[in-house]
Length: 200
Image (cartoon, rainbow, N blue to C red; front, side):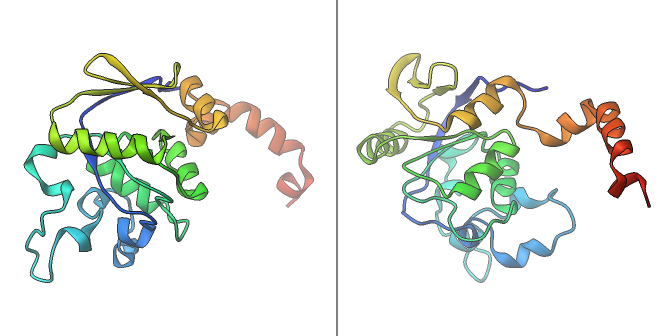
């Protein structure tokens, strides 16, 4: 299993409270059969006008190119339970999200994709977003073992993360599909003993 103990990289700030899954991934893109192209669509309607011209969203600014840590505010990912939202962020390049708070289903969907959702206070997030905007080349390191965020190699601040989610990430048990495949013989053996599985 793939254990996730640290995420390192640049950060991109996306400001605003209550950014819901409709804003993260517009509903018209849910009709795609696979998640393959989802990396094209995060925040699409906020990034482009009706003619496809960029509006200057942080995801399109050159100083944030290659960023893999997303900095957000309160109640990020609220709205529907669609997995497409974290899928689109992940396929754009996001490997961790740091916010003031998250919608629970969104945070759970992120964990199932191996994306940590760490929380900090409002004041701390204001400082992080300001730092990312003023010095976009700043390198951050999210350490899930120590629950500490480092910047440029120095301890920056402590963060919180739900312990069950942290354990799943650092122990490599976040990928339920891989867990099932790794335990396929045991799963088959149990299924063979269940009358509602083997009795038909």
